[in-house]
Image (cartoon, rainbow, N blue to C red; front, side):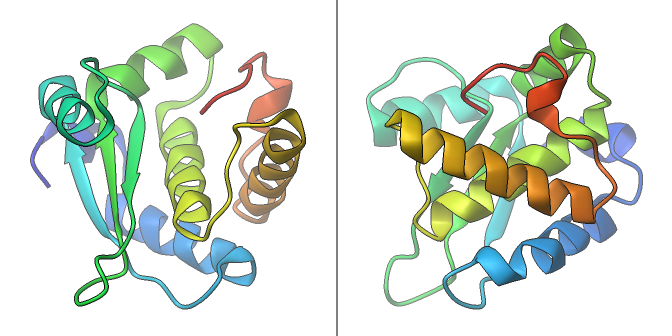
Length: 146
């Protein structure tokens, strides 16, 4: 974990990530335990520029496994996630859990480039989050594109 603000903002951080993994299990393509990078916008902006050719921070980035080690990586940007939670009126830990689930689904091959893919991914995220007792993020005025 690169940025200490995550632990201060998400009580029982590791337990919440473990619960997200457990709740997502039925929708994953195989057993996965990805590595997580919880960083600030600066670090995520650098990764986004290097690997996605987008010179800006984003809330979550996923990186597929490389075939020889690991089950993929999920990187989250603190300031962006904090800002999104505040703007949409969501609790920070809830928005964080949503983005962890979102990243897990990306690693399992889900996407949201087309409207039908986006609807399916949103419905799946909502079902998983309901298993965690987290309100449907798409009903809170969150809009598309986690």
